[in-house]
Length: 483
Image (cartoon, rainbow, N blue to C red; front, side, top):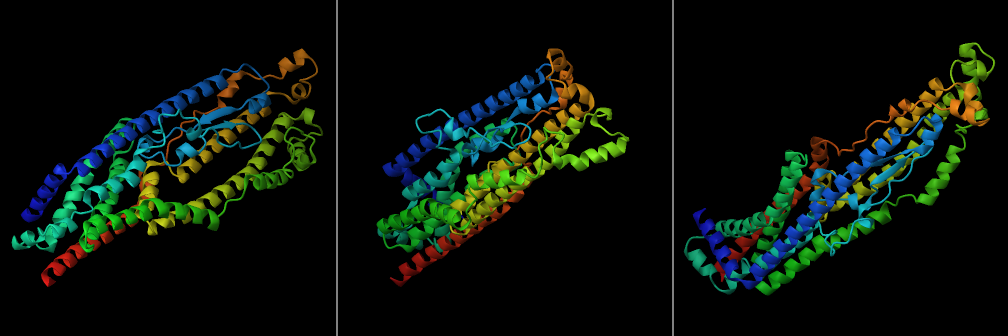
C-alpha cells in the first residue's frame, strides 16, 4: 500500500506541474461553484416565492364575504408546487413541468408556468445545474487530466523504474486509481456544500448522503475507465482519443439516443385526442347545475322515498346541493380515469427510458439522482394527485354546505330580486373547508427505494470499470515483461 500511495503522491506532483491539469481543474471548479450558487439561489427564491403565494392564495379564499356556495366553487383556489430541498443539486423535471394549478369545480386544470419559461436569464447559468456539471463536464475534465496516467509511464519508460522497485500491476492499478479518485473527491466538495445547504432547509441527511455517494460512484467509474483505457492503448494520444470517444458516447450520444427511441417506442396520446375523448365521456355524467336533469331522476326518486315527500320544496335538505355533490363525484371519477391513464402512459415511457441505464452509467446516475432528490416524474405526479385531492375535498365541502346551510326555496329564487340574492348567501365561515396545501416530495426512504435500481446499476458499472482498469494494468505489465 505504501508503494501505491507513493504513486498517488507522484501523480499529484505531476498534475501540479501541468498547466493543462491545473487550468482545466481550476476552470471546472469555477464552473461548478457558479452552477451551485446560481441553482441554490434560483431554487430557493422559487421555493420562498411559491410558499408566499400559497399563503396569499389561502388568505384570499378565506377572506371572501358571504356568498352563494356554488359561486365559491367557481371562484376556485390556487395551489403551488414547491421544489424539494435537494433540488438545489438536481432540479430534475421541475423546470419543465407546471408549478401552479388552479382548482375549481367540474374540471381538472393543467399545472402551468414551468420554471424554465419564467426564470430570469442569468447569463445561461439558470440551466447549468450541479447535476449537469457532474454528469457531463466533470468526467470530461477527468479525461483531460488523466488520459495519460498509465500510458505516460510507458512512453517515458518510467515503468521500468516502477517494476524495479517491485511495484507490480496491483500497486499500479491501486495508485493510479486512487489518484483520480482523490481528484474526484476534491471536485465533489462544492456538491457537498450544496447538500449541506439543503440540509439546513429540511432535506434528509440520509438522502443527501446517498445522493453524494451516487455521484462519487459515477466519478469512480470514470476514474477506473480512464486508467483502463490509458493502460490498454499504445500512446497517450490514442488514450486521449479513445477516452474522448467514450465520453461522447456515454455522456452525449446515449442519453439523446435513448430519449429519441423512448419517444418512438412508447408514444403518449396527444392532448387534443385526449380532450375530445374526455368531453365525450363527460356527456353521460349529467349537468350538476340542473337538478331536473334526467341523469338524476333516480337520485331524486330515492330522496323523495327516503323522506316521504313528493316535491323538492318539502325536502329537509337542498336538492340542488345534493345534485351538485353527486355530479361532482361522478365527474371526478371520469376525470381521474383519464388523468390516471395519461400518467400511466408517461410512467411507461419513463420506465422505458430508465432501461437506458444498461447502456450508459450517466443515465443510471441521472435516474437515481432525480429519484433520490424527489424531482423525478413520479414526484410530479404525486403533486398532481395531491392537488386533485385538495380540489375534490374543498369543492365537496362547499357542496355539503350548499345542502345543509341553504334552503331549496331560497336557492331557486336567488335571482328574483336583490333581497332574494342576499338570502341565498351562506356564512363565510363555511369557506374554512379549504385545507392548507403544503406539497412535499415522497419520504426519503421511499425515494431511495425507488432509486435503488439506478444506484445498483451504477455500482455494477463502477465494478465493471474497476475490473477493466485492473486487467488493463496487468496487460500493460505483461506487455512490458514480454518486451
